[in-house]
Image (cartoon, rainbow, N blue to C red; front, side, top):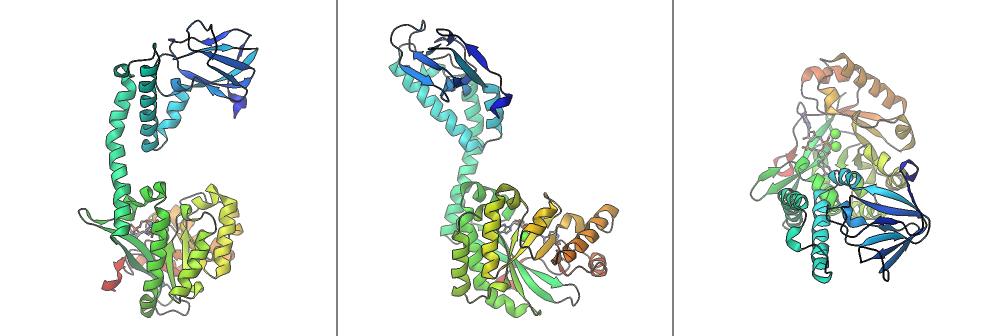
Length: 391
Ligand code: C2E
Ligand code: CA
Ligand code: CA
């Protein structure tokens, strides 16, 4: 990466910046070394010496305060500048919680310096831009932190629920299995969709606890649900998030749950999206192999919407392809969708997989899928997701 960055070459004794100067970048030392002085003229005893690979002037990356020290090269030195503009672009893509924490820490650091250092910047003069920025972030951050807190409470107070949606055998029309879909019975907001909170649970790591809760509840309920299926190989499908696929914990926990609730592993299907193949392909491969060795089967969810690398289909031990509902709902009105559905079914079959069509809402779509030899269908035509008590 460093190959693309511009370099600056300095001779011995040359200044990089003076205290009080306007700063808009930090530096990485590629070779040579730099002395740091408190005095603007760079005389007296240096307060620090930084060498190859070290970074200095970093405070200028986050706010536009004057330099609080002087940097002077101790020898011939090559520096790689890191522009504030670049860092700001990166920060824009970062979680606002991290962004505002950095700004607060920086503000405190400046405040402390202004007390201990005579030429330090007064607290009330903190860069206005940074202040405005923090204020505008505050609302968003507060909302996010409140959501993370609410999820933690909801786990403690048992506010989550699993809804089950039937998956039907298209040849017989019988229920072959169910997909477990999480819901949040929020005390004030009512029933909350997973799309409104899972992203937060993913970013805080709460997905691990939530995912385990889901697996346990699905295993526990399966004994009752299974009675409602009419298929020779009935199954319960549970969604896994990529963040649950770390370490070996999941295999051990799953093994324990299957034994606890007396669920045959082959009746548990784990649904994953293609993102896991991209984020950490080798770790995913090892964990998914462990899960299939346990006896569970894997389904590739939302097929067609992600990076459908055919090598992933071949490399990973996937038993089921779930074609995304965006293709199913348009397959009778768009020739392209129709072609994608029919060729995906052929591809899956040729790789030894069975196929679930998601989002089957009408009888016409159902009939077309039967003609295309699709194995299973899921959607409002067969039944909406419902809580177990309503089953
Ligand atoms: P998904 O895995 O693709 O689940 C199918 C979604 O399509 C469900 O939305 C379901 O209610 C909806 N659906 C089913 N049939 C039809 C239909 O005929 N027409 C239309 N328009 N929609 C239909 P839901 O329950 O809101 O879940 C959204 C997503 O949240 C799921 O998409 C899944 O990615 C995620 N999710 C749900 N529960 C869990 C969970 O326990 N763990 C994890 N990691 N993710 C979950
Ligand atoms: Ca799914
Ligand atoms: Ca899906």
